[in-house]
Amino acid sequence: MKIAYPPVFIVGCPRSGSTLLMQDLLRRGGVACPTNLMSRFYGDPWVGALAHRILFELDYRGEIFQDHAEVEPISDLGKTIGAHAPHEFWYWWRRYFHFEHDHGRVPEISRGMRDRFRADLAGMTSVFERSMLLKAMIMDWNIPMLHALVPEAVFIFLERDLEANASSLLNAREAFYGDRNEWWAFRPPEIDDLLRKESLEQVFAQVRLTNDAVRQGMRSLPPERSLHWRYERFCKAPGEHHQQLMELLGAAPGGANGAVAAYPISPPNWPSDVPTARIEELIDRYSLRDST
Image (cartoon, rainbow, N blue to C red):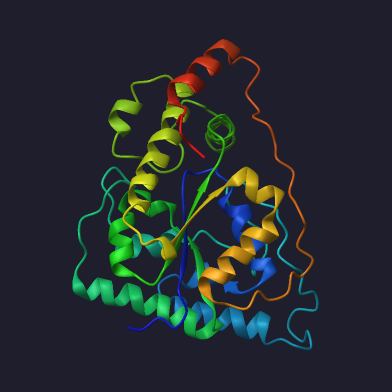
């Protein structure tokens, strides 16, 4: 099944800024993505894409929705507001891939499932007539497999500062469960060992192990199919990153639609009872010395 425009997959650790990245790229143009409306049709995303395009992109006179608000850079643990806002689309991914340890490595899928997966991507792409942008962190440990399935796809590895990413993960546990000892987000293959550690060390190890797995997977990709973006650099110059992606896709940049020139970078926000000395110890232990 031919896919007319190369899909774009975002990989990296949860809480690395992937939702903001999607919102910004979507607003600047040149790509489409699954939306909250489309998520209701995850069993047949082609139908969902058609519904979205008819209700939003082809509603020129505002006869259906009077207010066609732009996608705003607002989210809560990856969840956005509005029928037209980006959606993570995890239900769709889980239709095709069955994960060990919930989100670790997956076994090979059948030829029929591979064909259906590509057909879904091709269907969404044909409706929007541009590249589909999807979060693919659920496949962080299976990048070579995903590349083999969709060799025309471009992968963006989004990497955030270790301490900022770890603190965001710990705060996400508190926000979602009300308990920082509960694991939140994707479970790496090393999950059994990680659960024996204290919660603070767990989040540092989660960032390091996830990024190491992504870094290893990205080495299997040809240079023209991979981008490694630092979250902090993206926030300072999102327009430059969008232009880089458009050049790699060979796509027209589209209109900026009010996209901002830069985003504020929030410092790590640790709970008051977390010892500073322990944070510094874990930063030293889990930092990647040659990370650029």
